[in-house]
Length: 137
Length: 140
Image (cartoon, chains in turn green, cyan):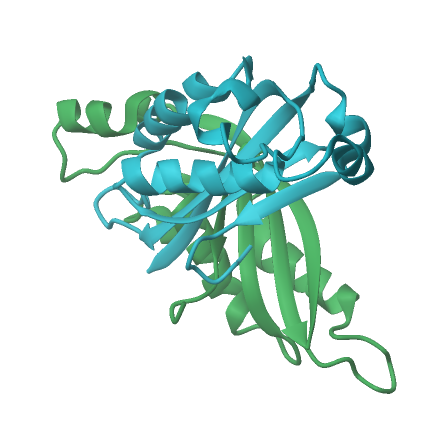
């Protein structure tokens, strides 16, 4: 088994708000992240896939295909967007980095042909990142 | 659904690698420059990884404010701008970054209860890093 990781970067804005909380609760739990006009990050996405090395091509996965899938499923949908308002997963889910990693996993999982998704890592800043290994982990 | 969250912190400290179980020559041979008698310093980077189910009402594994509070109080306040060898935990243990990773993992294992502690990773310099996960399987 060989693991391969591809990176991508995108910039987006978000804010944290739970409509089931009172205004005070939202402020207490989410602090500055609750500011309703949102704020932005430069996100770094690392997608790790795993598989056997194909004897003829020497590839675990065709990098061009992986790049195309990441571009179509993630960057086209999220780059330079307001996650709360423009990405359907976040109309009823808070766009924390945890939920972002899960949403990206779900977008990519069914699109990969030969290799299997191993890990989605999302850096919100260089000092904070979330890893998601799928539901069974 | 379970997710892993990692936060990076920084502190600076000095240490000297010298084992009381070795002769002076053995210490010099084993630790080289790191055995120089007055010690030397590093800018350490600590990565703390915690895991748990993503809370459906907050979207979080744990609130970062809680993690920052505990790491700040229990780790950074204890080690930043200190000489590690004079601290109680390194009175009989050489303050290698291996032992420092174990110590910080044990401190956080005792003091942070808002999510499951997975791993502590320390970069001593840009060229070397050390990871300790206790009884957990190493991931990430």
